[in-house]
Image (cartoon, rainbow, N blue to C red):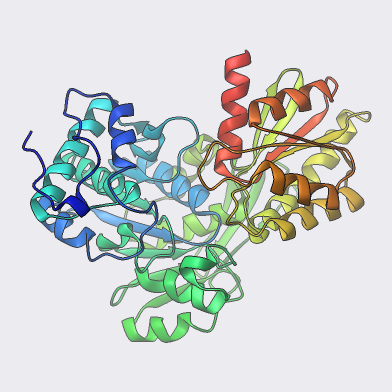
Length: 449
């Protein structure tokens, strides 16, 4: 491979791997190319994207932005498209256990060598352009290259951060989805819903359809829609859902149809938003496709209930106030049903968060849940394995303000063992706060089993 002729300020500290290197070597290398992990803007990305010659002319593209619910929404769109016979590409981030989770075709993770070959092409293109790219920019472009090379019929793309300046926005969407707008990533997107919404609405294009998943739309979105002559489908006005008397079914409705459907594994709200996007597209999607697909849609870490170590665990990546509110709304009927089956069961919490998150509103909601729905018997925390992790000192400062029985450790392996030691068979354990919290606990459990 041709070596970099970049100026010293742009050159990585070591030589790039080759197509014969391992995926681990490539991922490690790409984390050190750029000066920062997050660098909003497309001015470095677009020249590399153009040099690669990535085209999407034959594909229909769904681009999904939002503070929470993007993973569930994209997974549902992709599974229904696959059920309908379309060759479907799905891009999501971050991953829980292995990087390959981010890049899927027809539900299957792409293999290591496919990723490595794509990384090598991206690396050569960025060197030829004399530019550096962040880890997320490199890996996202690699996904797009793979999708184009495999001539996928449908691309379902989850925005990483915001929308307007996110690398996903180099791809022209045919239909846009904004699941919701909450306060998160304020240092990059702004400190109000209006500012954040304007960033997310940056995925709009002329004459596009936007599916918006909330009744309360920030005031900055309508002017951007008017500028693009976009068509709006909004939750509560143009589509909705309701539970039925039959516990196994629910009812989706929009202005044209009403569908009786099987209860999905993921949230009804995000499922309804995904169905609305599909029915608004020119793709051939019928009720049979939706009915067959919904029971198959699963997404690790999204209200993910598992039986491990003789205990019932619920994993959810909720990591901000809006996401925690959504999680606890789902958790309330779940714990009531669980208590009916296991009257003596106690609830335990494993939580850790990144330092740049607003931790206290999340803890306050969990405290209220403990006081009004089901007492949290013990709390266990450890430092996430991530450069932006909240420190043990910070966790020690905050958690005892909200809970009494708190144990805090230097890592999540110890926190996981602690919650097992402090719980009994059939107790309920909630794990939340970050993708990295879920990953750490799942990894710890897999190593111990």
